[in-house]
Length: 293
Image (cartoon, rainbow, N blue to C red; front, side, top):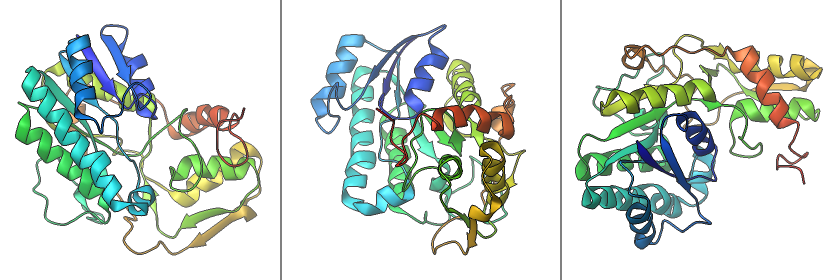
């Protein structure tokens, strides 16, 4: 299959291209290839490469970055996704859209399944803009795939404000900086190779619809993740500072993955091994979290 991937400069796209390339012809585009704010760009790429599927990963990601400029988040996520969906419709090709667990909103200890109706708003414009993207994909393309990614991590994620807590904890422990932990916070982290393998299995199944992609069998407190980061780097637990979570932040997430597991998917990389692999990447970052020159 010929697959066009947007967002090639981001975290997931290089892993998608590597994870799919053994059996599929992949082509990635990013902001330097062409700005997707220009509707002509995606149409030009589709016309030139002639894909059978577009995996749309390009987006402004994260709660904090989304709230920095809500209007730009809407442009980057909702409006660009609508245009990509229209381009796929006009070309008669399928669309796989990278959504997020944030679309569900906060359900506390209750599991969020793919077939449930949305009965509450997300806490942030990021989640709302990704929900819009899902609806645009449904509106304009036939049988789209909606990847609801949950807590992927691994090499390639930068550290710093607004970035994944697990990466930040490894980086902070490595550089002996304070590690903030939100009281009661719990997550099920999924190593990126397992995440991408799940996405590939969905694509190759030929099915559409929404899919939770993450783990539902390894919930761990973020305090434990912080302690593991200290253990891996030899840092003292005294760096860990526990405080209440800020308002409008989901403290606990529960995303059942029976639908994905029905395809034969199961995770292979446990948290300790995944964090060890990720630490090797974190060691290449400078003290501010950027890739060292």
